[in-house]
Image 1: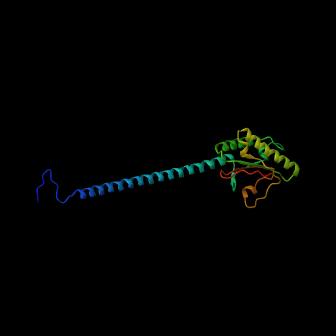
Image 2: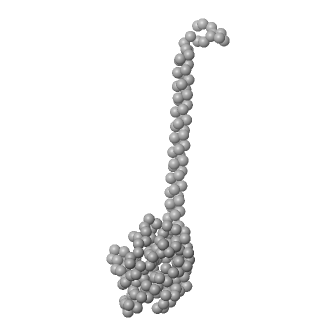
Image 3: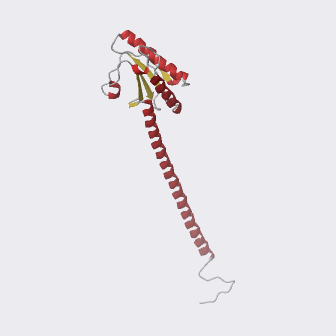
Length: 197
């Protein structure tokens, strides 16, 4: 084997071979770096999904707590809050203390969920139909006025005229309500309130 001095190169390594070796080494480093970046991005996406899932679970729990506070039930359009004769003074539109408490909780809920709207409907009982119908409409209007006084935007609250209590065979939550009542449907965020005139 020939001896190498400081100024000579081994005969087997040429400049092009050295350049190729350097390119291969650099390419391998770039591949490793790209894989590390990809793994880091996937880890970040996984953490974001985990955070979104945790947020959704917290929101679902918070909604259940708020439903309990409102004494509301889930129905196909959103949440149903029913105010019956107990929530008003007898044969009047004046809210009782429990009516105030429930509507204050509703106003608070609506302020926390600004994309939700409500539809308020009064329903007549089985007594004097004209009297019950007029009283139910006045009560629905009183509920609407109460919410407007608590700074809920008018475009989020409707109180269409209603008549006799509807019979909903498929929805036991509604079917079991008292005949003379005011129903507040808290629409899902994706729904919009439509006025029936």
